[in-house]
Length: 535
Ligand SMILES: Cc1cc2nc3c(=O)[nH]c(=O)nc-3n(C[C@H](O)[C@H](O)[C@H](O)COP(=O)(O)OP(=O)(O)OC[C@H]3O[C@@H](n4cnc5c(N)ncnc54)[C@H](O)[C@@H]3O)c2cc1C
Image: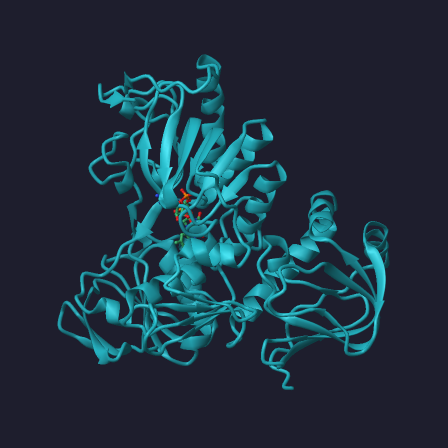
């Protein structure tokens, strides 16, 4: 057995924390060679070691790390319910406390310090494991296969621990997805993968709720925390990954209350835990396909033939990255061209020439993150002065990390073979050698699915308040349908604003519900403020 990761975080539990855990859990013993949990198990308890030692192994038997007395075992999947993808084997006679998942969840809600320690450790372990090849879900399919690339992107944005094998497989529908424990799925939907992994709520064909929130980014999660904590039956549906754009941010430096900054994954992970604590339900991946406004209840149709009837709806679907108008861009995507910069990309790009394209804060953050990982980074942006679009503190960071900044630069062509980038040509004709390209080009609002159900501005963002002729500030032209965050016309595209708008929308939801008391399932037709018929 080979030790492949020795630096996975392993903090020490205090004597009083161990005592608290012992009170709530069950004290057990185990002998050398006993298996505490193994790859493919559906669940495992939180394990706090009183004395002894445990080794953590991958499916092939490679040792990842050892934990001794006062340490604890566990990773993010303990909270999400995901199928186990590591094995724990006793290497010295063991006395330990085992605490079930539900009991751990309740304890984390009550004990702030323990919650801090466990959540930060689980997040750091997840990040460390994402850098290790050969564990978790295995996605097999070549980079030329679109469904394969969609699955890789989905796994990446959900921060799953996964390995992608960029290889052709004969006679199977792509991608081939191997689950921990050995089961194989051919060309599954993302929902099938999530539910096969034990993650995510399966919705009934029709659900009735007070408040439906479409989109699980900061705005949607803000609305969920306030809606659920104020007694509304609240459901969040999310098409890709809870956390939204913010979830992919390496470090959010300007969110109130975190002077040292916080990773997007941690901030949104905590928000999800907080929403669930107040009994908000989150269902992912379910994409909203249509909104049918009604008088008493609005109906939102989802993928997989599901529909939700809701007395009020908050639309918080945010926005999506823009791509470069380059014909062969797709050949490079996911291999050498990326739309997010996380730990796997930073590892991939160390000591390579990297271009980050874009002038906004997200481009600046990615450039700094990659430079810190050892890449030689150039930031390419269209305008003359970066200060028009990027925060001052980030511009100073770019200088600090020696990142070259090239204004008035637009990428016109990519050069390389088989998805391996060698160089790019700028619109000026200048050719620059880069091995990787990161695109942060702004975003398009995720509102196409709404068609004309809700009024939008020229760019597709949702109109609210006076601009929509609505009664409430965040209400759209459809009474009882609200918009919050990046998807809203005129909103400030920032995390804190999105959270604030989500929270504020709930106040208007209450006002709306107060003037439209529940009267069973009303489906009679009416009109919205533009005179468009509502069922
Ligand atoms: C890399 C990066 C770094 C950033 N850094 C910072 C920062 O440091 N500070 C800061 O203040 N802001 C930062 N931002 C901006 C900030 O993340 C956004 O302003 C914020 O996430 C907007 O939140 P939102 O909930 O409105 O939308 P989003 O975060 O876009 O969330 C919308 C969600 O809706 C889902 N969705 C879309 N369509 C559907 C559908 N039809 N059905 C169901 N679900 C759907 C999407 O999958 C997504 O998860 C950053 C953004 C990025 C991309």
